[in-house]
Image 1 (cartoon, helix red, strand yellow):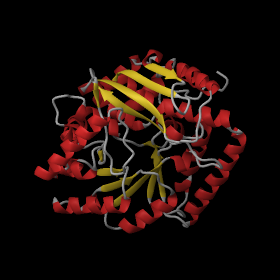
Image 2 (cartoon, helix red, strand yellow; image 1 turned 180 degrees about the vertical axis):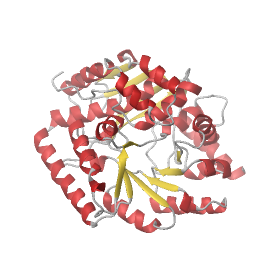
Image 3 (spheres, one colour; image 1 turned 90 degrees about the horizontal axis):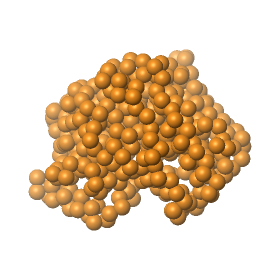
Length: 404
């Protein structure tokens, strides 16, 4: 490797990977998935040297193991079970699950294939590695870090002074961070936001479990789209228009009333609401927004809770789609005193520099040998290799919406 090792701990992933991982281990250990990398930036190219470095960094990641101290930390999270901790004691990433080539328009192609238990865990570290390799090898990293620090100070000062009000927020930026160093700077800085009574905004934690442990703050995260896609569409006997019901039901089997923030937009929020009826709406403490207009979505969720006879003031609307503090401020002011509002803020906190951030993703493209897809509330956010399957999924959703 030309660079220092980027991922230095298996805790260096988002908490929802452990949330989903435990449920996968207990309920779907035999499921197999394929994941595919995609760079959405049309002007970005990865050089062969970058691809070689990415390979070496991923090999180094695959040599990591959980330490007993890390396992003890995970065991201290109230919804993590001992059986899953014991599994993680034996678990290790497999470089053999990766296929990394230059065979893509952007110069970098990555696929991972294997058990869902394994491949799910690769997504976040892989994206973090790709990001850091790119920015360190494409630009003058020291200059980027200086611009990052300047912008970070400005954000902190405006939030601390009350220019912006972000309510309750957490940091979600691991997958698209400038570097491990930059994310640690951001998390450490905002962890001091609550030290005085002067700031009315409240920083509650980070999705990065390694940094949560390091700085003694709360790790944050529940489920991602992969959970709904694989649980709902991985069993070929299921009607995919009911993906949310299968996924929510399996989540409740695993966690009961704990760890309960439901993601609404895997196959559109309108279809989600068909299944998010009184039992689920009562058991889950809130819902997460990740596509579509946030104000329209929030109003729709409030109306839905009220239609079920539930007080929206007792539920949390978590917003996490391409946020900055200005957007969060506007959203909070709109919903203030009507419901609990929280924010998960990613790239804006972990990779805001003098150059544009990468828009890279790694998504589940197959489960148990069959295509899977998401149809979000924002056109173009889905990713599937088979347009015929997307058309089939859309027709299933349309039939349900029109006839049920």
